[in-house]
Length: 149
Image 1 (spheres, one colour):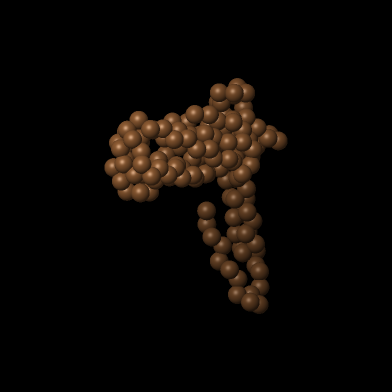
Image 2: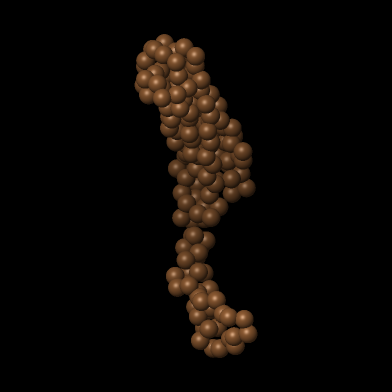
């Protein structure tokens, strides 16, 4: 989209300048209309079936938790929950990733599993494949619709 040059103080506003402003506003409205005029956000969830809404009504929440273990053995499993700061209308679609914050072998050899997802939180399980000391971070991204949609 073209940028409109700012007028100088005292500059008369002529027809071409007002036309450029109107054109930029119309261009901006055209870009936003794709987000507001149709239900282009479709949530194919496990609970509640398919739901659709305007993209601008979608809710995306990122979360983080730490799982610390002073001494893990191969096969040990630890769980942690992350609460969403806002509820979803149905359980959202969630992605979780591991971050090796302790820079150890046991922090690298981790299998992360999402145990449960509700409209207010997600529970993850980290299973360690190598014995050692480990602290890992768990990042989550939850995508869904807020309760009023």
